Length: 228
Image 1 (cartoon, rainbow, N blue to C red):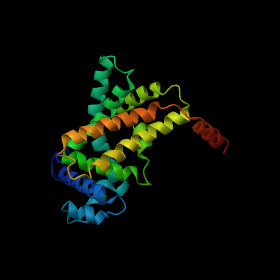
Image 2: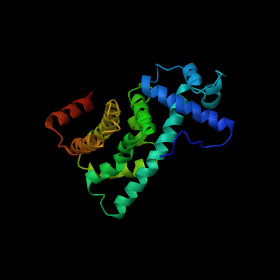
Image 3: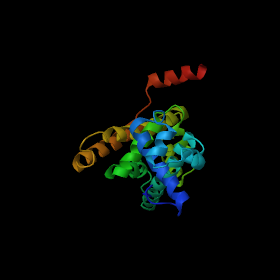
Image 4: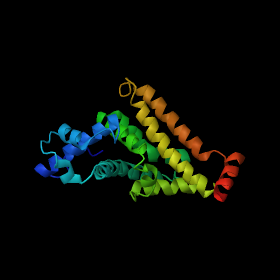
């Protein structure tokens, strides 16, 4: 995973931009997007010039998007490689294997403090009304996400489209929220056996949620919603 601590560009301007992103990711992850001011981010990044953040990003929303773009791109490179390997092994008909290739690059973030910071940040973005993270993810155009999504859509081909879309959103929400909650454990990084049990159970839960039969109650509710 590409670290925010590693400058993507050289020189003072690049260093300042990365320090601001790093500070914002940490503060947003700890307190939420609306509880953190631009002034606090500037101070956390060691910037005396209070206009530094506005100069580099223009707004808080653009700052959040810049962090997402940077982090998700790095995670997605790993995901794309896992999907490529699964395709080469002709394992794309195995939904659980697809789920693992899709989400293991995220669960592996729990191994490092930096990864934990991003998980917490992403969960805050997920819960913020100004962002629709599941839709952004599904429409992002990142290669790994696009290929994984196509495989999951194919696996859900027998479901009504509205149900398939709803389950994909729930899948993203379930994983990010569960990962963020896990990081609150005092032994979250140290207890590897417990983390492995948690991760495998999470994959089971995602698989079950995606592949469960559609109940008559859900179909009736869908029909009623369509009329409304």
